[in-house]
Amino acid sequence: MNKQLVAGLACLTVCALSACGTDSGNAETDATPMPSTAIVPSEVVLSDVDAPAGYIHADVADTLDSDIGEVSNEEVIAMFTEISDSTVTDPEACGALVPTAVDTVLRLNEDRAGTAVSEYASDGTEGTDSAITVVATTSDTGARVPESLDECTSFTRTSSSGDTEASVTYRVSPLDLDVEGADGLIAARAEADQGGAAESTTVVAGTVDGVYFQINATGPIDDQLVSDLAEKQIGKIEGA
Image 1 (cartoon, one colour):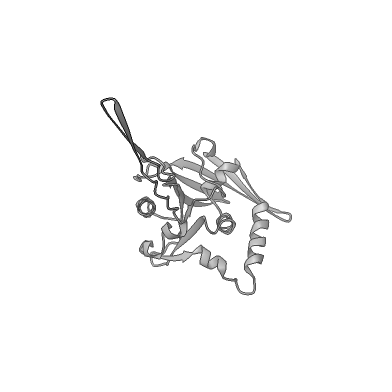
Image 2 (image 1 turned 90 degrees about the horizontal axis):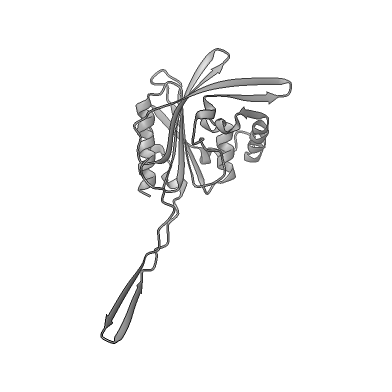
Protein backbone atom coordinates (compact mmCIF):
# COMPACT_ATOMS: atom_id res chain seq x y z
CA MET A 1 0.00 0.00 0.00
CA ASN A 2 2.99 2.34 0.58
CA LYS A 3 4.66 1.29 -2.65
CA GLN A 4 4.59 3.71 -5.59
CA LEU A 5 3.01 2.49 -8.80
CA VAL A 6 5.71 1.56 -11.32
CA ALA A 7 4.66 2.08 -14.93
CA GLY A 8 8.06 1.40 -16.50
CA LEU A 9 11.77 2.04 -16.23
CA ALA A 10 12.94 5.69 -16.03
CA CYS A 11 15.55 7.19 -18.37
CA LEU A 12 18.70 8.30 -16.56
CA THR A 13 21.18 10.76 -18.09
CA VAL A 14 24.53 11.42 -16.44
CA CYS A 15 26.48 14.58 -17.40
CA ALA A 16 30.14 15.13 -16.42
CA LEU A 17 31.63 18.55 -17.02
CA SER A 18 35.27 19.52 -16.45
CA ALA A 19 37.29 22.76 -17.04
CA CYS A 20 41.00 23.57 -16.77
CA GLY A 21 42.45 27.15 -17.02
CA THR A 22 41.17 28.98 -20.08
CA ASP A 23 40.48 25.69 -21.88
CA SER A 24 37.28 23.78 -21.28
CA GLY A 25 36.30 20.23 -22.12
CA ASN A 26 32.90 18.60 -22.05
CA ALA A 27 32.36 14.94 -21.43
CA GLU A 28 28.76 13.77 -21.66
CA THR A 29 27.65 10.24 -21.03
CA ASP A 30 24.11 9.10 -21.72
CA ALA A 31 22.93 5.99 -19.98
CA THR A 32 20.79 4.19 -22.54
CA PRO A 33 17.48 3.34 -20.90
CA MET A 34 16.70 -0.33 -20.69
CA PRO A 35 13.44 -1.22 -22.44
CA SER A 36 10.65 -1.90 -19.98
CA THR A 37 9.34 -5.43 -19.93
CA ALA A 38 5.58 -5.60 -19.96
CA ILE A 39 4.10 -7.94 -17.38
CA VAL A 40 1.95 -10.66 -18.90
CA PRO A 41 -1.09 -11.30 -16.67
CA SER A 42 -1.33 -14.98 -17.61
CA GLU A 43 2.21 -15.46 -16.30
CA VAL A 44 1.61 -13.82 -12.92
CA VAL A 45 -1.99 -14.67 -12.03
CA LEU A 46 -2.31 -17.26 -9.27
CA SER A 47 -2.31 -20.75 -10.75
CA ASP A 48 -2.70 -24.41 -9.85
CA VAL A 49 0.46 -24.39 -7.74
CA ASP A 50 -1.04 -21.65 -5.60
CA ALA A 51 -4.30 -23.49 -4.87
CA PRO A 52 -5.21 -23.52 -1.17
CA ALA A 53 -5.62 -26.90 0.47
CA GLY A 54 -9.05 -28.32 -0.29
CA TYR A 55 -9.51 -26.35 -3.52
CA ILE A 56 -9.38 -27.35 -7.18
CA HIS A 57 -7.94 -24.92 -9.74
CA ALA A 58 -9.30 -24.03 -13.17
CA ASP A 59 -7.86 -21.65 -15.77
CA VAL A 60 -10.87 -19.79 -17.14
CA ALA A 61 -9.12 -19.14 -20.46
CA ASP A 62 -8.80 -22.88 -21.03
CA THR A 63 -12.46 -23.34 -20.21
CA LEU A 64 -13.40 -20.52 -22.55
CA ASP A 65 -11.41 -22.11 -25.35
CA SER A 66 -13.38 -25.33 -25.01
CA ASP A 67 -16.84 -25.75 -26.48
CA ILE A 68 -19.44 -26.77 -23.93
CA GLY A 69 -21.05 -29.91 -25.32
CA GLU A 70 -22.70 -28.94 -28.57
CA VAL A 71 -22.60 -25.23 -27.73
CA SER A 72 -19.76 -23.32 -29.39
CA ASN A 73 -17.65 -20.65 -27.73
CA GLU A 74 -19.30 -17.99 -29.91
CA GLU A 75 -22.75 -19.08 -28.78
CA VAL A 76 -21.71 -18.97 -25.14
CA ILE A 77 -20.35 -15.43 -25.51
CA ALA A 78 -23.51 -14.31 -27.31
CA MET A 79 -25.66 -15.81 -24.55
CA PHE A 80 -23.53 -14.22 -21.82
CA THR A 81 -23.68 -10.85 -23.57
CA GLU A 82 -27.46 -11.04 -23.64
CA ILE A 83 -27.53 -11.85 -19.92
CA SER A 84 -25.17 -8.97 -19.17
CA ASP A 85 -27.27 -6.53 -21.18
CA SER A 86 -30.36 -7.50 -19.18
CA THR A 87 -28.66 -6.98 -15.82
CA VAL A 88 -28.63 -3.60 -14.08
CA THR A 89 -26.69 -2.65 -10.94
CA ASP A 90 -27.55 0.47 -8.95
CA PRO A 91 -25.25 2.28 -8.30
CA GLU A 92 -23.52 0.92 -11.40
CA ALA A 93 -19.93 1.29 -10.13
CA CYS A 94 -20.66 -0.96 -7.15
CA GLY A 95 -21.19 -4.00 -9.35
CA ALA A 96 -17.42 -4.44 -9.62
CA LEU A 97 -17.33 -5.47 -5.97
CA VAL A 98 -19.24 -8.66 -6.74
CA PRO A 99 -18.79 -9.48 -10.43
CA THR A 100 -20.92 -12.31 -11.78
CA ALA A 101 -19.46 -15.28 -13.63
CA VAL A 102 -20.86 -13.69 -16.78
CA ASP A 103 -19.00 -10.45 -16.06
CA THR A 104 -15.74 -12.32 -15.54
CA VAL A 105 -15.97 -14.40 -18.72
CA LEU A 106 -16.88 -11.40 -20.86
CA ARG A 107 -14.03 -9.40 -19.38
CA LEU A 108 -11.56 -12.14 -20.23
CA ASN A 109 -12.97 -12.62 -23.71
CA GLU A 110 -12.70 -8.90 -24.43
CA ASP A 111 -8.95 -8.80 -23.83
CA ARG A 112 -7.29 -12.20 -23.75
CA ALA A 113 -3.77 -10.76 -23.93
CA GLY A 114 -4.21 -8.26 -21.11
CA THR A 115 -6.36 -10.28 -18.72
CA ALA A 116 -6.06 -13.62 -16.94
CA VAL A 117 -8.51 -15.37 -14.63
CA SER A 118 -8.06 -18.29 -12.24
CA GLU A 119 -10.76 -20.02 -10.26
CA TYR A 120 -10.60 -22.23 -7.19
CA ALA A 121 -13.55 -24.35 -6.14
CA SER A 122 -13.80 -26.25 -2.87
CA ASP A 123 -13.41 -29.99 -3.36
CA GLY A 124 -16.07 -30.84 -0.78
CA THR A 125 -13.73 -32.38 1.76
CA GLU A 126 -14.58 -29.68 4.31
CA GLY A 127 -18.30 -30.03 3.74
CA THR A 128 -18.62 -26.46 2.49
CA ASP A 129 -19.39 -24.95 -0.90
CA SER A 130 -17.09 -22.03 -1.64
CA ALA A 131 -15.32 -20.52 -4.64
CA ILE A 132 -12.52 -18.05 -5.27
CA THR A 133 -11.98 -16.02 -8.44
CA VAL A 134 -8.69 -14.24 -9.13
CA VAL A 135 -8.31 -11.66 -11.91
CA ALA A 136 -5.06 -10.05 -13.03
CA THR A 137 -5.17 -7.45 -15.78
CA THR A 138 -3.22 -4.65 -17.43
CA SER A 139 -6.22 -3.69 -19.54
CA ASP A 140 -8.37 -0.61 -19.17
CA THR A 141 -11.44 -2.62 -20.07
CA GLY A 142 -13.61 -4.12 -17.38
CA ALA A 143 -14.94 -2.56 -14.20
CA ARG A 144 -12.71 -2.05 -11.18
CA VAL A 145 -13.57 -1.80 -7.52
CA PRO A 146 -14.36 1.84 -6.60
CA GLU A 147 -11.64 3.74 -4.74
CA SER A 148 -14.23 4.64 -2.11
CA LEU A 149 -16.94 2.40 -0.72
CA ASP A 150 -19.06 5.33 0.43
CA GLU A 151 -21.63 4.90 -2.36
CA CYS A 152 -21.63 1.13 -2.09
CA THR A 153 -22.72 0.48 1.47
CA SER A 154 -25.83 -0.92 -0.19
CA PHE A 155 -26.48 -1.69 -3.84
CA THR A 156 -28.93 -3.73 -5.87
CA ARG A 157 -28.45 -5.98 -8.90
CA THR A 158 -31.53 -6.72 -10.99
CA SER A 159 -31.69 -9.32 -13.76
CA SER A 160 -34.51 -9.62 -16.27
CA SER A 161 -35.54 -12.56 -18.42
CA GLY A 162 -38.74 -12.13 -20.36
CA ASP A 163 -41.43 -11.17 -17.88
CA THR A 164 -39.37 -12.43 -14.94
CA GLU A 165 -37.28 -10.10 -12.82
CA ALA A 166 -35.01 -10.96 -9.89
CA SER A 167 -33.17 -8.59 -7.57
CA VAL A 168 -30.39 -9.09 -5.07
CA THR A 169 -29.41 -6.46 -2.52
CA TYR A 170 -25.83 -6.34 -1.25
CA ARG A 171 -24.67 -4.68 1.94
CA VAL A 172 -20.99 -3.83 1.96
CA SER A 173 -18.62 -3.16 4.85
CA PRO A 174 -14.85 -2.49 4.75
CA LEU A 175 -12.43 -5.12 6.04
CA ASP A 176 -9.13 -4.57 7.79
CA LEU A 177 -7.05 -7.35 6.26
CA ASP A 178 -3.33 -7.67 6.87
CA VAL A 179 -2.26 -7.20 3.25
CA GLU A 180 0.58 -4.93 2.09
CA GLY A 181 2.41 -4.10 -1.11
CA ALA A 182 -0.39 -2.86 -3.37
CA ASP A 183 -1.52 0.63 -4.33
CA GLY A 184 -5.13 1.59 -3.75
CA LEU A 185 -5.83 -1.60 -1.81
CA ILE A 186 -9.51 -2.17 -1.06
CA ALA A 187 -10.80 -4.98 1.14
CA ALA A 188 -14.49 -5.44 1.81
CA ARG A 189 -17.24 -7.93 2.52
CA ALA A 190 -20.53 -7.96 0.64
CA GLU A 191 -23.50 -9.73 2.18
CA ALA A 192 -26.21 -10.66 -0.32
CA ASP A 193 -29.83 -11.20 0.62
CA GLN A 194 -31.46 -13.50 -1.92
CA GLY A 195 -34.96 -14.17 -0.67
CA GLY A 196 -33.79 -14.87 2.85
CA ALA A 197 -30.72 -16.90 1.84
CA ALA A 198 -27.63 -14.89 2.77
CA GLU A 199 -24.39 -15.25 0.82
CA SER A 200 -21.11 -13.62 1.75
CA THR A 201 -18.37 -12.47 -0.63
CA THR A 202 -14.97 -11.17 0.43
CA VAL A 203 -13.15 -8.96 -2.07
CA VAL A 204 -9.56 -7.70 -2.14
CA ALA A 205 -8.32 -5.50 -4.98
CA GLY A 206 -5.30 -3.34 -5.72
CA THR A 207 -2.60 -2.46 -8.24
CA VAL A 208 1.01 -3.65 -8.30
CA ASP A 209 3.51 -2.51 -10.94
CA GLY A 210 0.70 -1.53 -13.29
CA VAL A 211 -1.18 -4.80 -12.86
CA TYR A 212 -4.65 -4.61 -11.32
CA PHE A 213 -5.67 -7.70 -9.38
CA GLN A 214 -8.93 -8.65 -7.73
CA ILE A 215 -9.80 -11.62 -5.57
CA ASN A 216 -13.41 -12.55 -4.84
CA ALA A 217 -14.06 -15.31 -2.33
CA THR A 218 -17.65 -16.48 -1.99
CA GLY A 219 -18.93 -18.74 0.75
CA PRO A 220 -17.59 -19.65 4.19
CA ILE A 221 -13.93 -18.75 3.60
CA ASP A 222 -11.55 -17.66 6.35
CA ASP A 223 -10.22 -14.10 6.06
CA GLN A 224 -6.67 -15.34 6.59
CA LEU A 225 -6.91 -17.57 3.52
CA VAL A 226 -8.00 -14.59 1.43
CA SER A 227 -5.18 -12.46 2.88
CA ASP A 228 -2.64 -15.19 2.10
CA LEU A 229 -3.83 -15.40 -1.50
CA ALA A 230 -3.66 -11.62 -1.87
CA GLU A 231 -0.12 -11.52 -0.49
CA LYS A 232 0.87 -14.36 -2.80
CA GLN A 233 -0.65 -12.57 -5.80
CA ILE A 234 1.18 -9.35 -4.94
CA GLY A 235 4.44 -11.27 -4.60
CA LYS A 236 4.06 -12.96 -7.98
CA ILE A 237 3.49 -9.63 -9.72
CA GLU A 238 6.42 -7.99 -7.93
CA GLY A 239 8.67 -10.89 -8.89
CA ALA A 240 7.81 -10.75 -12.60
